[in-house]
Length: 219
Image (cartoon, rainbow, N blue to C red):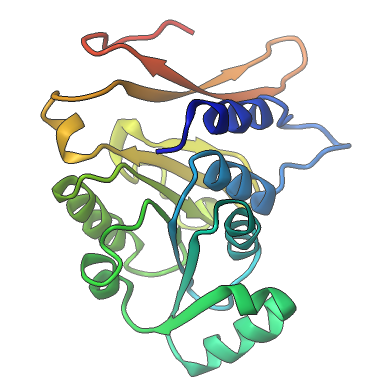
């Protein structure tokens, strides 16, 4: 994962997101960019159901800061050409691949440290499970985002460790620990916490580091 300064920068951005505010609608591209750049993501993969859009733009913005790679997996040549047209000049920073996300994410891109999945893909839950298995076999902590979550009622995607954020058409966010963390061996764990201000209705997202051995956090 990224350095302390990078993580703090991400947290500072997330704390400013105001849910339910008419003058500042949550922006998917900005959120994806801040999360990716804050964690210094080096291999970022997005699996699209149709045309690449705002999540891919967020990854491109992050890649400018981290020097990382952006891989966009599409289903066919029609989606490929429409994605290139939609992204415009930003398409030059994206490596497009036509194929099955499960195969690519369990093989060539199994070491991705950030994966974005379109929940409009019929097999999006299967893709998540593939990423989950690959990440737990590696030494890399992987952050997974699912967008368009409201479209498919994907609330239980990933279980209790997944947060559903009302950004865009719904964002699912989960972090899959590396092999060492799963076994309880090295480093510190972290959790995402969502808090709602009862007075303003604003919803704030925090990432909190926990010393090894502690399992609960009181909001």
